[in-house]
Image (tube, rainbow, N blue to C red):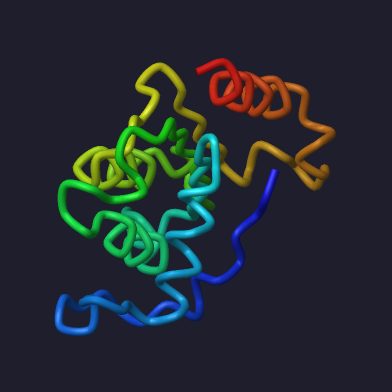
Amino acid sequence: MTIYEGLADLPHYNEDIDGESAPAAAEALRAAVAGADAVLLVSPENNGTISSSLKNAIDWLSRPFGSSVFKGKPTVVIGTSAGRYGGIWAIDETRKAAGIATANVLEDVKLAVPSSAFDGKHPREHAETVAELTKALDALTTV
């Protein structure tokens, strides 16, 4: 498993700078996704929606139109929020954006985790979260 940590380096998506040579950070993101067997997108919920950095990454991955590296890539989305719904709105928006960007979003896997579920415990000590996360990862490895 590779964790991509370069989202902060991506410029805001702009077709004017996404020509024959895209910015290096965008090329690095595209190369990482192209080399992956599957994609796990994890997002906090900010003001009831997807984080802007993840949305920007999806915008970069959606191009070039019709032949993006995201096309058909098995994808699962996980969200979290301080609110009681656990990021479900961000998950829905992320799944929608990734699907429009031609990723193969696995519809039967949805993991929303309210931060209140942990009651001071580390997430790995929360059996329900561990079981749901295992289910999500298993779905990606069996596609």
